[in-house]
Image 1: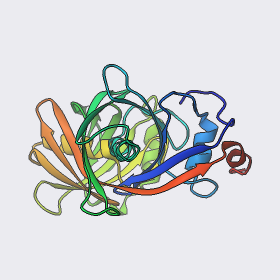
Image 2: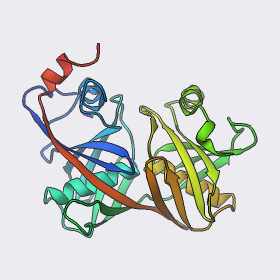
Image 3: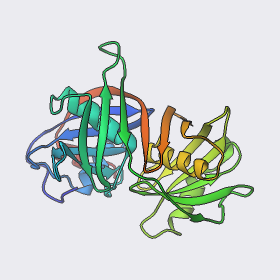
Length: 281
């Protein structure tokens, strides 16, 4: 996020979620509302602010794309890529009339991505969006942080550590995820994954750097499916059960595609100066 003064005017945002992974979206085609990390933290705070896992500014297209995504984590830090956030951006952009579905492109720090959008069957129901995540680059095997499993680093435009083991329901996601941040310069997203309950299905919990545990993670879902496929444990079409809902990953030789429902939550207008002044002590 550009470190400029955001307190000159009110901000009009929309809130969306993909499988419970929620984002605030600000349309800023003229790039006039750069947000400081402090303002992002205040907006994303679930007690003193609006609440979200991250904030996305929608900018004019770059590098031949239709739009550009400027993404910040809930702690105000910059993030390269988000699968569910891209799907939330898609819904916001279609609702604002910025693009015409079904297909358009978005520039990110992880590269230009293609999005497909399909409206839901009812006016108030969820829509459906898919995003081409680009290649999933599998790293070397790692020493697992959870005993009895396997581990590897996966790059899907941002870094992930996939830990395969038993049902993650009993894992201290916050404790293990926080500890692992110290072992990777710049931090890392951590997926705790188990096979099943059915064929070509994974169960996942995730710790996102700059956020903590979230109900779903699009890039983490893609990374987990790619790692499991690389281990020969699943096929090329994988359902990944996040705590907030199930997402589908389709694996091709040179890319992975993430698909799932995306829901509009609310329109929000805030005064950043007031928000920061009344924010967390």
